[in-house]
Image 1 (cartoon, one colour):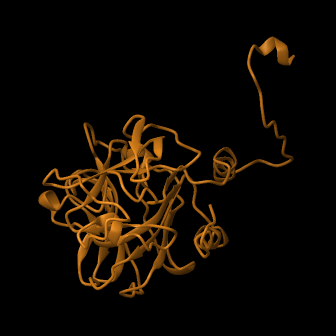
Image 2: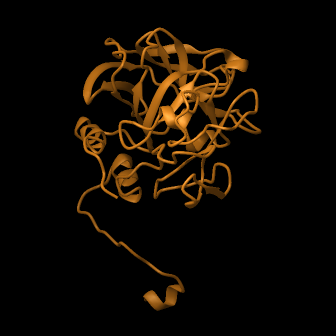
Length: 285
């Protein structure tokens, strides 16, 4: 029978119950995120996707040489600035204007320091979003340093006029916003607690097609109903960003981001704790 197929088969499983869409998604994604930005490059203008579950190339295959001459071939977000100046330094150059040097002590190994002008952009909204009716989870570590008072984009469409969900930081609060009409954003969920300055906070946002849930450090902070399915109308280059191009929408982020992950199913609280605790100790390489 197998030889007649003319193909290879692997991982056959038979269950004595009907699997839910979320269980199926967890199985084929091996309980791993399909986007995982470690920010461990320590140089480079690419934040590479370290996930083993890469569905769609974001920038094509990239070959990048780090400061230590290590060569990486991967996909990821392009780090850039409105000015076009792409020198972000490295972890060793001891410059107070170097994004990588300022991020040398991240939550896990190194992080990237966003200085209000630096931002990341990618070309595939559907691979990097809480998007069109799909169950999703976004998790990341954030540290605003001495800049707790700011309004900044953490992740979402490059322009507020693009349809889709956006995650924003507003004076200590995390917001989930939605543009369902191609005109403007509306608030869907705002955190009750605020993120403390000069400290790392783990943020997790889940959607299940009906509800939004927001967790700080593994504890449910707030939830809301009214999830809306939207059809993404973004076309062309760079429809989605981390931080934001301040010359376009004036919402560049100042602070550190680390260990950014996106899953294609809503994590449970226990799974969020596992995601968070993966960063509780220093890895030995």
